[in-house]
Image 1 (cartoon, one colour):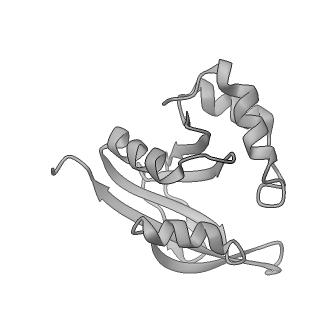
Image 2 (tube, rainbow, N blue to C red):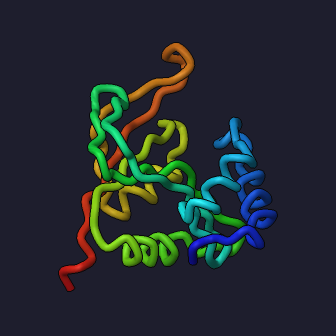
Length: 144
C-alpha cells in the first residue's frame, strides 16, 4: 500500500492523466513523498499526503500540528478510490485530514462528501481567479 520507488513511473503516469487538475505536478516531489513513505499506491489509486509540522493558514482555516494534508489523489481507469481511501484511513488509524479542492472539481468534492468530509471555508488562488474549498475529515478507526 505504501508506494515504493518501483511504483514511481506508474504513479507519475496516473497523475499525468489529470494535468488539468494538477498543473504543477513535480516528479521530484512525488519521489520525495515515496522516500518519506507519504504516498499510497494500490489498485490504480495514488494518494499523496504529508503531516503538518506546524500550524498553517488555508484561507480563514488554521491547520494543527499533526493534521494530515491530503495533497493529491487520482486514479487510473478501473481504479478503486473508495476502497483504497478507506484502507488508507485504517492504516492511519485516527486524525484529521485537511485538503483544498477547486470548486470546479465537482467529482472530487462529491467523493470527499461521500466520505464524510466537511467544507470549512472557501479559499482562492491565482489572485482570486480560482475558487476552492478547504475540507476536513476527523476520523478514528480504533473504535470498532
